[in-house]
Length: 170
Image 1 (cartoon, rainbow, N blue to C red):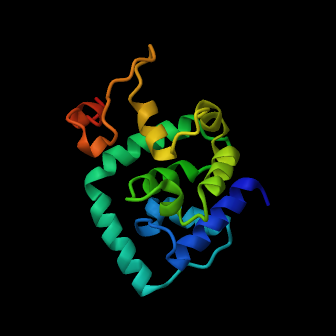
Image 2 (image 1 turned 90 degrees about the vertical axis):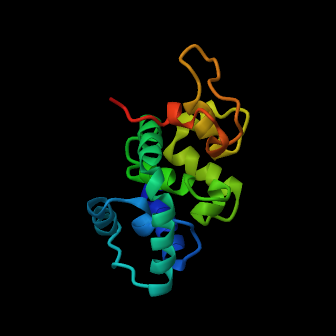
């Protein structure tokens, strides 16, 4: 079993246990969700309490779908070739309310770094300052091509330029 499959199994186990803060189907479209379950030879999970919690998370994230898609697209550019659909899972968890490692249900920030090293090695190299991952993702998304930082806000939710950064692409 490859590293990606190991991480996908780990995240799916945490998802099923309710330890992670994911929306429904880990934020994956139904076809991607079915593909993931098939790829891992995983029986469809069933837990009414967890499903209700995930439906609530889905509702909370519904207004941020475009942001999630843009983040997933950016992550895809830096993902190891065999790591799909990790970019979608990480983007969905990034919209959670805690540190990314906590929203994924992982044991520590160090475990998240291991996941990132296996699935997004280019981002690990770029994050040489070891910035917290969510902050790093959004900070990278706010850089101009000349290296100038567009925003100074510590959080996109607090930023007055939110519509500029997450405007629909034409």
